[in-house]
Length: 261
Image 1: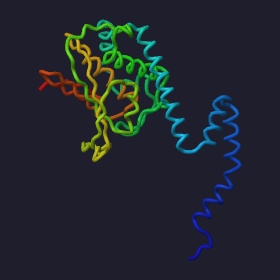
Image 2 (image 1 turned 60 degrees about the vertical axis):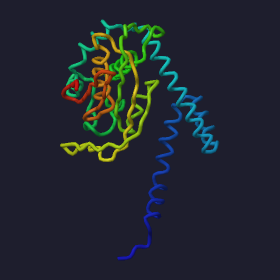
Image 3 (image 1 turned 180 degrees about the vertical axis):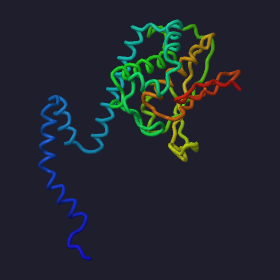
Image 4 (image 1 turned 120 degrees about the vertical axis):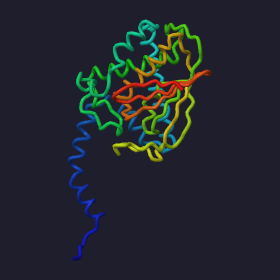
C-alpha cells in the first residue's frame, strides 16, 4: 500500500488543527499572570541563548537566597535546642510512607523508588511538615548562635548522603557540602528501581554532635521524612562517621536502622 503523505505532513496538519485551541488557552493563561513576570518573559525571549542562561542562573540564585533567608528567619523564631529536637524525634521517628498517606500528608504519590514526589502529591500539612523537616536538618547540621540554635557540640562527625543526580536538587538548601559524583549499581529485589549505572551524587558535610547523639537521631528522622515526602527513594543511604567509629544509616519506608561497626 502506498501513501501520498509523510509523518512530517501528518504532524504539521495536526499542529494547524490544534493551533487555535492552543492560542486560546495560552492567551487565557497569560491574562491571569503578573505584569512584571510577563515583561521579564518577553525580555528573556529577545536575548541570545548565553544571556538567557545567565539570566536564568541569576534568577535561580536569587530564589535560592530568598528561600535561605526565610529559613534562617524561621530558625531564629524556633530557637532549636536539644529538648525541642527530642520532641521532634519522638513525634516523627515512627512515620513511614503508609502513615503519611493514612494521615493525609501524601495524596496518591508516585511508586516508591521512581519519580520525585512533587507539590501536587502533598497536602498543605504535607508541605508544612516537609519544610519543618528541612529546617530541622539545616539547623542541626549548620545552626549556631547566629540562628538561635543551641547545642553543646562535643565532637565532629561527617555525614555522607547518596542521591541520584536528578533528585539532588531536593537538598539544595544545604550549605558547606562537598559533592562527589559516582555510579550506582544497586539491584532492586522487586525490580522496581534498579540503580544499575545510575549517576549518583554523594554529599558530605561535617557537623558537631552532642554527648547524647541526638543530632544523629535527628538527622535520621528528618531524612526519613524528606525521603518519604519528596525524594522518594526505596532506600535512602546515609553514613555518619567520626574519628573512632562509623555508623551506617539505612532509611526506607518501613524502618530505621543505625548499625555500628
